[in-house]
Amino acid sequence: MNENTIWNEQQNNPELVIWDAIKAFNLSENQANELRQILLRRGINKWLWGRRLFIKLKHDVKAELKEAFRLKYPKPERMILQRINSRMQEIAKLPRWIEWPKTTSRRWNKIEPLIEIKGKRC
Image (cartoon, rainbow, N blue to C red; front, side, top):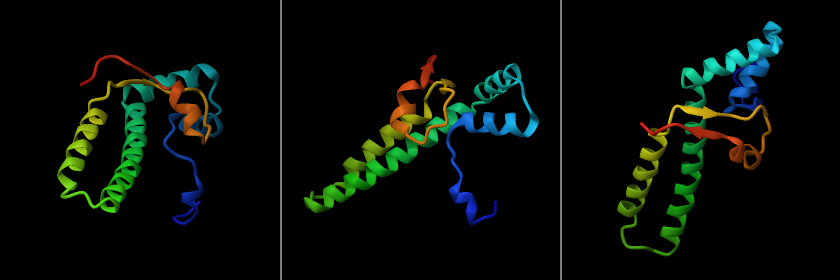
């Protein structure tokens, strides 16, 4: 792997870290489950889920701005910025307890419904 080929690697899923650790260190299932707990406890699951939501927000904002300029809304920026800020606040205040499924599928529409968000928001 190098700075060019790293873009071919999957990311944004804590289970990928687990699978890499199992291969690299020959972890047992109990050790893999302990690593899952460590990632949960340290906020890695929340960070990866928040990153995924920010990427989704980025795509939504681009589409919304494109539509606003296509329809020539008068000064749409303020309205759009307020919605962006609101969604960023929602992402930032996610609970820390976020459990990911034991899958590394590249299809987010399959993974997203299986992610469990528990606990109270910040």
